[in-house]
Image 1 (cartoon, rainbow, N blue to C red):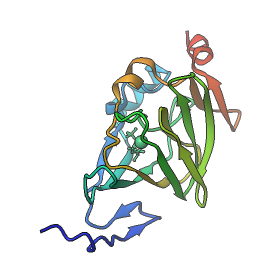
Image 2 (cartoon, rainbow, N blue to C red):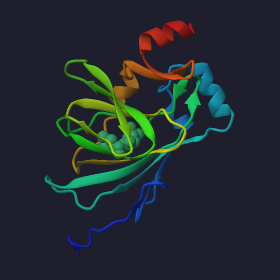
Image 3 (tube, rainbow, N blue to C red):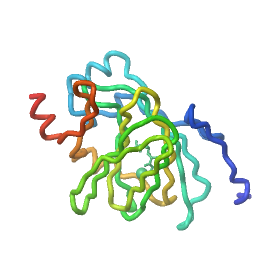
Image 4 (cartoon, rainbow, N blue to C red):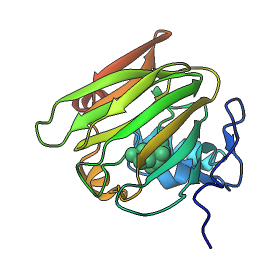
Length: 194
Ligand code: F6R
Ligand code: MN
C-alpha cells in the first residue's frame, strides 16, 4: 500500500540527480523547430546530436491537491548564436502554476502569457526563484558555461501541452552577440537569417 510518509528524496544540485528517479533525456534532434537557425540546428544534429537537458521527476501521488516536482539539468551550449534551451510548454490544465527554484548555474526563463501575448525573460539562477503563473508558457535557457540545474514544483494534474508551442514558438530568442547575452524578437532573428 502507498505510504504517504515515506516521501523523503535526496537531490544533488551539482549533478542534477534525484534519488529514485531515472532522468528523461532530451537530445538536440528532439528539439526540431525550437531554434531559429535551421541550418545551424541541422549541422549540430549531424555533428553528434548532443544531450541538451535531462529531467528527473517525482510523482508521489495524483490527487487534485497533490504536487509533482522535477529537477531539470540544462547543459551549456549553443545552436548558432542561440543558447541551449528546453522545448517549453503550457500546462494542459491551463490555470496550473509552477515554482522554479534555481540550484546551480545561470540562465533565463522565457515567459509568455497566452491570454495577453505579454512576454518577458526572467533570470533563473542558483538561489533565485521564478514563479510561473497559470496560462503562462515557459521555457528555460542556459546562458552560462556550466549546467543550469533547477527544481520545478507543479500541481500533479498540470499536464504538459507541447503542441501549442510547437505551432507558435516563443516570441523571444536568447542569443550570444559580441560576448553578451541578448534577448531578441524572433521575427528580427528570422529576418536576419534570411
Ligand atoms: C514541469 C516543468 C519542468 C520542465 C523541464 C523540461 O511542468 O515545467 O519540469 O518539464 O524544465 O522542459 P520541457 O518540459 O519544456 O521539455
Ligand atoms: Mn511546467
